[in-house]
Length: 262
Image (tube, helix red, strand yellow):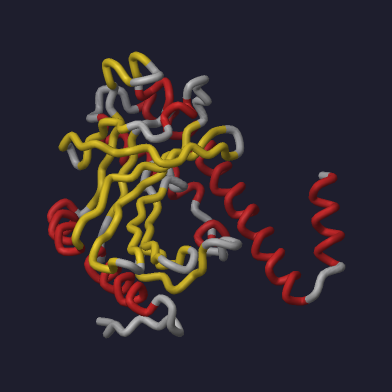
């Protein structure tokens, strides 16, 4: 409360430009807090629903309980995308995709999870090579395992639409009552990504156990990630990446995507 009052006092005494910047900071933290609270409540409902759906295929159970969570909890203020202070700049929204500029050198195209909404799938295009696209995703966990920070730079095994793949942990960031873990799956050509997700229409992920992981020992996914699964729908990914690539090629200029909308 004291920190909030100090922030509010400085907010009132600032110039209009500074006020605008601080207002965006306030909105960002408000949105982040609400999204994480929503995820915590989602986890409670998801666990309850799954306990009531015993005997049903786990994927179907996840989808049903996820739909209940989304139906009950989605509200307009959580869907409204506010500016992220300092690093991200909103460019546009295309169907379920958010297209943003990150720092001065890259474009990020992202969408939110179907089981845990706050988990994000995103594709990053860097100015120096707009034809190469990094695929990353985040998982929020409240497990707070004592060795969770040792996961940074570790390569974990996941399934990608049922196929085993590797993903490197690049960030472990404290957030509210847990941590946000960011995974990097590597760089691909746009055509590869479009061909793959046009076939599957989603990115369905689960984190796998590892018999022996350096600095950890026996790695049990459920010990580190209370919900080690999620999936993201990927409709219109071809257009979203094309728009993002057009923005990438304009970085450093007056940013405008030369892309003919359908």
